[in-house]
Amino acid sequence: MANTATTRPTADGQQRLALIERARHNVLQSRSEMASPWLSPPIERSWRRCLSMGLEPHRRVVFEEVGASGKRQIVERNQALLEAATPVIGSLSRAMLHSRYFALLTDAQGVVIDVNGPVDRHNAQASSIARVGVDLSEKAVGTTAIGTCLTEQEAVWLHRGEHFFEDNSVYSCAGAPIWGPDGNCVGMLDLTGINVQEQPALKHLVTQSARSIENAMTLSRPHKMLLRLNWPGRVLGDDNDGLIGVDGDGLVVAMNRPASEMLGLMPGIGQTHCDDVFAVPSQQLFDAASRQQSAFEAPLWSGLRLQVLAQTSKPATGRSRSCGTARHAVPLRDVETAMIRKAVEDARGNVMEAARTLGISRATVYRRLNRAKSGN
Picture 1 (cartoon, rainbow, N blue to C red):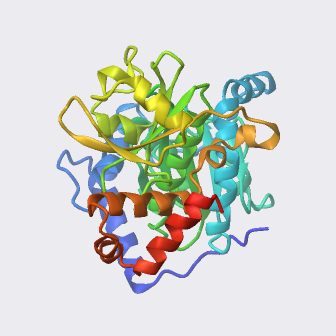
Picture 2: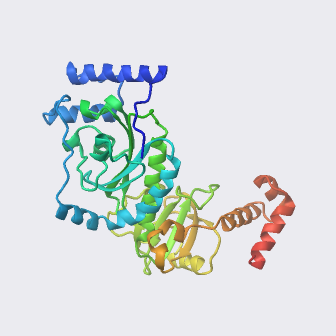
Picture 3: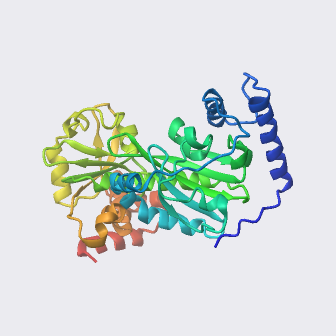
């Protein structure tokens, strides 16, 4: 069980808490309309929304949950999100192993649909929020990472008194929204600790984890071909890749946010065809996928160029059905080989120049290329 004993603040921690208290006095007690310099704008906007709803900071907080039937409906409605999030949350739990933080997954309305991590069920402050079906939206429990990030639609970090209600000042939490393949926010991921040391680095962890969940949801959409995208010079094969799922007719059926940003498209708006984005015929992309061709640079109609790796879709079987990211991941050896081939091509066949560019020996270049030819 998690030990939720109060952590002694450091000198910097005490100063941070003092600044938060100063902000609370300025905004919540004096009701000043001036922006508070001690508070991040998303949190201040949340505080002011709570005040406009008639909420008062000293009011007792009741963590209400939906009924049994409502709980079942919420879980059933969010199966795709739950399946995509399960392996990701398992990994981030290892990153937080000794931090006394746990993970909450909510739907787009802020209702908890999954709990993972060291929750002390004997602690009322933990057990009251770490329950499937509990409503942790802004209108229900005021300013939290969950309500703020779902409203502001950006990652946030909140510590102690940055929560609107005084009852919630024991919590520290990081949250990030999760975007579905159609461009809509489908939920959020929250990392929460009780009376713990402040860990702003968790904002980065929760943001990266949310992106992994988004990619798994994108990959789970039925598609004939997957396009992995990144800018020239970047290494393909991680969660920063743009992902586009394409059906047999060349229509885009799924797209993650990095892909939409690289292509300058809004996901989920109308039907987009590959031929309207790439200045190469879609059949050329399908041919590259069927030949298992290594990554190549493709021109866009915008005049920009992207590195593209085209892959054919393989039917999911057994356990891999819920682990889309692993099912479509690019093997590290293939990524390295693609980089070496590209460097040799750019050097117009000059292996020594390619080796110098990559920072490896000429012998290594020959060895990797020969290994790729032999299939070993």
